[in-house]
Length: 313
Image (cartoon, rainbow, N blue to C red):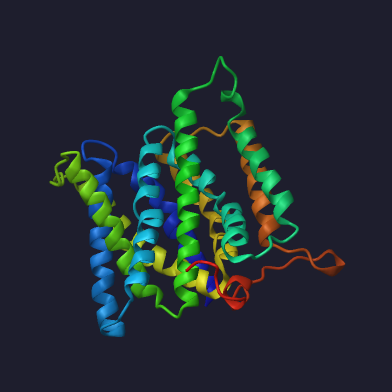
């Protein structure tokens, strides 16, 4: 079951990056985010009512859902959408693969879960890989401001996504249903994006463009309702650290699409950099056991779920 859900997340999220690129243009980023998560959150609320009936959350729980919405369904996507106008979405997805390292760090900060020893070489390889990936553009002669902005925004968005993972763990440790908390978090994220869009005077009218509307509904239904539901299901089953291992594979899907439709070119340094990043992630993913053998391990629950209660209120 875990492996099937894992594969589904890889395929869905590997394709959503290009869908984000298709939304670039005349519609404000905040408006695109508003409609995406309004549709997704509203649909999830209906499913939640059908599956679970009327569910009760405390005001405190709603406060944490609001925080999750800001981190995972609003401000982080604002960063991703902005970054998509500066760098290719395939490269964005590679940077997003750093979520595995951010999750390990945040679980140590918020849940006192000590990172495994292989975290350190994996983190080092991740940083080295990112450096090599953009090595031809770091020099003053070639440096592009748009590159720096795109990378920076992608990293900020990825860290926000990781914080959303920590809040999801908080919900699940208190016995709250993923379906319930996700639906409210998405609605809150949409509300924040909508308020900001209204404040800046953006129009909420959507263009009658099949490409934009198709991307919107794909992102809302597959990328948000199904993708995030499956991902947070994995967070509950195998922990945030190992759930983030989906980021090991979906950059390959995203880069393949980016090569075909965005003209991404595979220079030697890009191949080497990506290889080192994936190697670092696989070191985290495939623990080495005695006799030098490795295997994919998907435990029922992580230490973060099984351990003592969170230090979060």
